[in-house]
Image 1 (tube, helix red, strand yellow):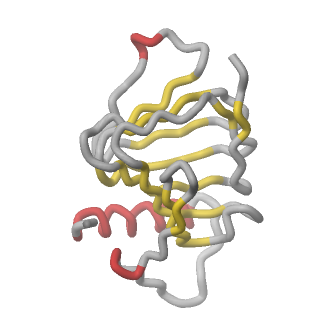
Image 2 (cartoon, rainbow, N blue to C red):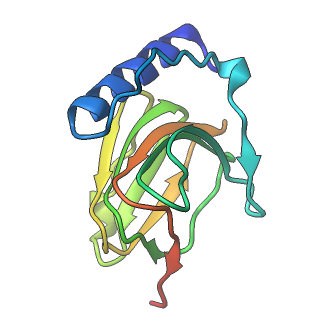
Length: 145
């Protein structure tokens, strides 16, 4: 369950994203957590759209990953910006020294540049939830190492 502090953080992130170049809506949009419409992938990752259609254009969404999930190495063709709102995650470039992997608890910010091969992990014992802004449409292009 998402608490009110997470909703406040989500509000701040939406405002920041709008000021960073996303277009503002003509009216106020309020979405309490119980109104989020989650779509779950075969891998168990869930997306709740906030702004935009992720397969068509830049978008904002809440993303939920199962505890222990480790993504395959992949790239995206758009830049990703996120804030962890629950759980603890890591994002590490494929060619990075493993000792540089940083644990990202609730409140942490991350940016993954377009084209950087990386692995994302939900390393907490509970699911991970992140607010995500991607400045282009969603894609997930697996990389062979």
